[in-house]
Image 1: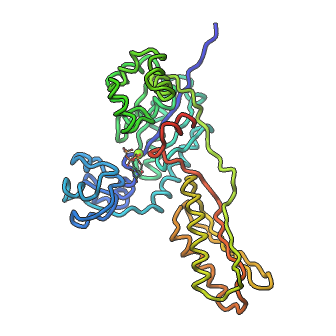
Image 2: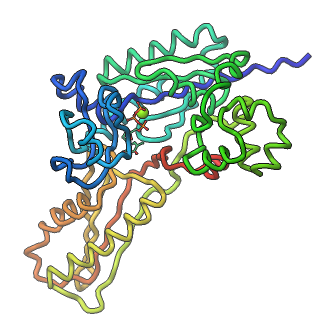
Image 3: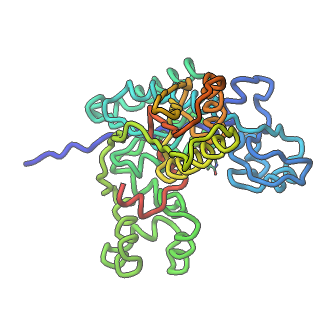
Length: 366
Ligand code: TTP
Ligand code: MG
């Protein structure tokens, strides 16, 4: 007889992440509705809510809601602008801890990661103990809470981590999977967004139980490849491994030679702006962050200099890069030669998959 050991996967997701960091740094905000996002400008503001504390969620607020609506529902809330650099730093601290629990670690968005704990747990008995340990270590070192879902596949672990937030641990054994999923709305399935939900609803599929009842061939007939994927997920057959993404590329750079050597500062700056914008379009498309910013400058006569500056955490911020580049340029302001070429290089790269934007097809091919 062949015994197939089922895997034990943890999905860890920080609770109302941006808001938790702000509350940690300003304890007077504790237990209050805290909203991170655009300036509400007394209800006239444009833009959206990035996230909000669980107290704010009690007023009906949620991520991506227009900030004007949030203000209408909760005018007494504490509205704060996001401090992305701070959140990236906190995220890195958390990820360092999570990574130490298993060599099979995969970071997804800024606030979530998978761990394959099969070799560490052996049985489900140890699962809860280790999950608690992770929560304690993150809280004691970073000061924020997270929820953990544990199951034998990535998708079920992800559904489980969302089930008992904040600061929850949800363990789903294979034999309990169907009961656990049965009455859930299909929107809980990772990869089903609002659009596919309404498509599924039109065909009479509302709860996960409706999928569990169907044989695979019917799901394929109704929804094609997507239906096959969803059927596999709810039946615990998502076999995707936990694998860390390694950015193969070491740096991304661009440089431009002037048609004619120049000492016109505004022309030089506008060339740097152009390069900077191009690089950032690429980085955004590929969801890549960086820590090190390098200026390259070549004068007439081919003297070439590079000057670098490293941030303390990973960023992706076009304005910040330009500011750093202009600072690095100051060293050359008394150089009397004309400039022949300028370039920007960003290195120390890291890819951060933002799961909130993962479309089902990307998900299938992940
Ligand atoms: P999520 O994990 O989706 O949300 P959350 O951590 O705030 O809340 P939960 O407890 O339900 O997990 O996203 C992580 C962070 O990403 C979040 O704190 C803010 C940011 N974010 C946005 O900026 N815009 C969005 O639309 C979403 C969904 C998240
Ligand atoms: Mg979260």
